[in-house]
Length: 395
Image (cartoon, rainbow, N blue to C red; front, side, top):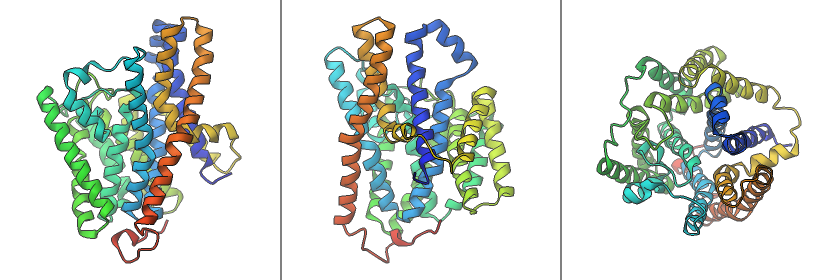
């Protein structure tokens, strides 16, 4: 068992919860599903678990390698191949009449395409070609923030970021603008252009891996927080309910980082506890008591059991969780077009989603990661010394 098997298990569990959440209205009916949803939003519960795991893992990965170049090469290879393959599959299914593309793709084509290029759809007011894409906006924003903090050697300030974002969401109380950069179609289009230029420029600078460029890119990376502060509910097509909710989701990710730093004695418990308490208060305010407490409790139990053996099926689910998360709705969409038999839908959904996840992981995700390793080796990343990227951070 690897030392991070508990995180794989938690990630796999969260992916299964999301899949079952989307299956629910088909099996029990929309009315019953909405009744459960009003009492407990299982979708947000699972997504917040994902965010906590990302907050724990992503800074650890960056600081272990000590290289922004390696971090971004690894991240791009980890997330983009499966993401692009999902878009291609959705397009093929749409052409066959088995998937409906968002109307916004037709009415606001430029904004939609550019927003998908950066994965920042939800924060730009664009609905994803596949609905689960919305969380990737927050993952990408978190990567930019973490990279910016690392470039400026401010990454140990995780508790301040967690508490600050959560406190701003609490204090604002609905007073932040929700769509400052997405007033209408043309505004969304220009916002998408600007964000594409920013993301492409800063990621390129990080991949070049020179200190001066990295410092400039870091400052620009940190400025992108404005999307969450003032564009958190950029249009009726997005999932985030408000800028306050967007800030809270980012705060939850930084809370995962705080937990990691406390565990590795980089932050004292006295400093971390108030920050985590503020994040919990903000989550209670934005997502309700049942969801917030369930997220905290689930992660707490998993953390407490982190040294125990993890069932192999859970670690496998964690390994394929990204492909499972991206593809399960496409599987469900195809099934409901061919049959109304609920038993067949359940069997087909479970088998089809797991098979799609396995194939996606083996044929798309893993080759992408191997390409990143080859790229870094070819470019001399493993032997270069003295560059900004090799100023390693002990963890």
